[in-house]
Image: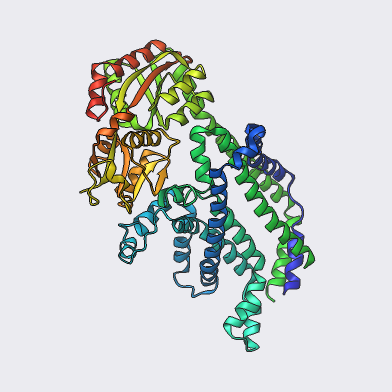
Length: 272
Length: 281
C-alpha cells in the first residue's frame, strides 16, 4: 500500500504555466513589505534601540511566554487532535468547528472572552478569586491568551497528519498485541512527527506574534505582561524608530524559528 | 486493493481529456485574473473616494479628530451639516499620534483636532498645518472606579494603597503622561499593575472589575454612560489637557474648513463639548 501511494504523488509534476504568475504575485505581496521595514530601520542606532531595558525585557518575556504556551499547546493539543482524527465520529464535525473558533475570531474578541471568563468577575475567575488566584495582569494570563489563539494551529496540522497517515499500522500493531498506549508512543507518534513539528512551529510563531488577546486580557506592564508586539505598538506612539527596530527583531526571530524547524524537517525527509 | 485500478483510470483520463483540461485551466486563469482585478479595484476605491471628496468644489471636508472626540464631533458634524445646507463632513477618528502619522503619509484631510498639544506640534513641525492651531477644549483626569466604588477610593493618594489594582495609561501616551504629572504634583508614587495603550483599554479593565481603579479623563468617565463611577481629585489641575484644532495646508475647501473650526470654537460647539464634560479653552 505505501508503495502504491508514492508514484501517485510523483505523477502530479506538470504544473500549468499560468500558476506561476499568481504564485509570484503572492510571494511578492508577502515579501515586499519586509523590504519596506528594512528601508525604515535606523541602522545607526539599531543596536541601542533593541538593547534598551524595555526592549530586552519585552524580547525575553516574549520568548519565555511563547515557549510556555507552545508546551501548553503540545500537552492539550495532541490529545485534542487524536480525538478529532480517531475518536468517535458522532458530533466530531461540530466539535472541530468549536475548537477551531479562535482561528477565525479576532484576537481582541478572544481576549474579551478570556477576560469575562477568567477575569476577577468572570464566572470562572470569581471562583479562582475565592482561592486567592488572580489571573488578569499576570504572566500566566499572557500564556493563556497565547495558548488560546495558537492551539487551533497545532490541532489542525496534527489532525491533518493523523488523517493522512491513516490507522493501518496502528491496526496491525494492535493485532500483534500492542496496548493502545504502546501503539500511540511507538507507532502513531513517530508517524506524525513531521506534522506535529510543523504544528508546534506554527503555534510558537503565532504565540510570538500574539497581540490583541494579550492586550485585552493580560494588560501591559514591562517585564510582566508587555511582550514584544505590545512594546512595538507602544513605542510607535513616541519613537517610531524603536518600533521599527523591534519589529525587525520580531521578524528575524520568527524567520529563524520557522526556518530552523522547516529546514531540519526537510533534511530529515531527505535522510529518510 | 480497490483503489489501484480506479487510480489508473483517473490518470489515463487526463491526457484523453487534454482539451477539456486546458479549457478549464484557462477558465480558472480568467477567474483568478477577474478576482485580482476586483481586489485591486476594491483596494483603490476608498482612495479615489477620498480624493474626490477633497478636490471637488462642492462643500465637503474631511476632519481627522482624536478618538476621545468621537461622540462630540459626530454630533457637531451633524449640526454643521444642518446649518450649512449641502455641506458634507467626513469624520475619521483615531489616536492623535496615528492621525499625525497618517497625515504625514499623505492622507487627505482638511481639519485636524488633536487630543494633546504634542501631537499638534508634530503636525506643525511637519508643515501640515495652515495658520496656527487654536485650543478649543480642555480636559482633566478623573479616577474611574467600578460601579459602586467597591475599593472605596476618594483621593489620588489612596491609589497608592498596597494591594490596590491600579491601571494607568502608559507614559508614552497622553493620558499616561498626564497621570504621572498629576501624581508628581500630589507627591504620590503610583504602582500600576498595568500600563495600557489607551484610555479605552484602561476603562475596559475597570468596567470588567479586574482593576480597582484607573486614571482617565472626565469625558471618558462620562462617555461610558454610567458603566463606571468617577472620582474627581484636586491634583488634576496640575495636568490639564488642552485640545488644539487646526486647518490643514493641503485643504482644497479651506473656507468650509475654516468655518468648521470656527463652529467648533463658537457657542454651539462649546455647548456640545461642555455637555460631554470638556472644559472651556
